Image 1 (cartoon, rainbow, N blue to C red):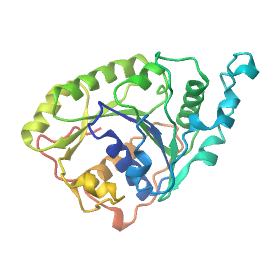
Image 2: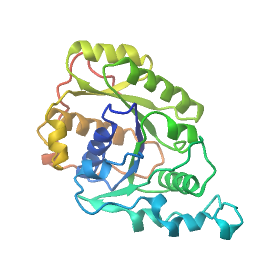
Image 3: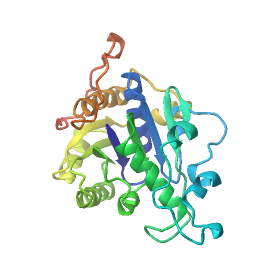
Image 4: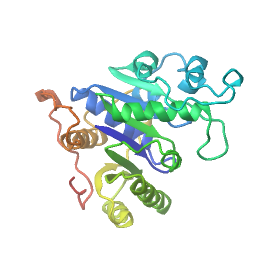
Length: 280
């Protein structure tokens, strides 16, 4: 199962990506979490407290595989070797392999630069070839969709909050995803305080299915800052339920089998504000 998590900045997409990766890991799956946001916080949200992680675009040896420098006559190798990168350059955080992609310091959209080629090919490899469950925390908004780096995802998960701006972003994401052939665009409502909030989000999403509603939790940021995941909290339980649902509805032929789940992981979905989210 390959999931790309996107949404307007500040809606909580990194938190959702981290909870999804953690839930899949606790369900027994092998998981790769990819931080494709220039403001990289996914590893820290998962609980990593080690030395700064050098992003892939900061590793000259990897960029040399692509070329484009003076020694290559300006030519780029469009299909560089990348299959060894996840194993060699990821950081393990509680059994989850975390890759930090890094920022492309170019202003123009869809730049033809070694950094872009490298990131595109790593993402494609993970989406098309990796046997693990993959969660990609994309940059805020829709930039990665514009670059065409998300064609092979099973689902695009758009995080929204009760506000027009995030709902408009979700609509644009769905349209561009459709242009790339992604037929499964799902939404997670975050920071839901009331039934009114849930109804507002559902109405604003239109045809985009709302598959989870996460209640507003004033203490969530404090707990995640310390790397803690409250397994009795409503957000954790709702994300565990969503993780199961996504895994069980995986794309045919993916080769991923649902593992046996022990009684300690049989968590029910959290009570969400009514109306309830649509099922997949």
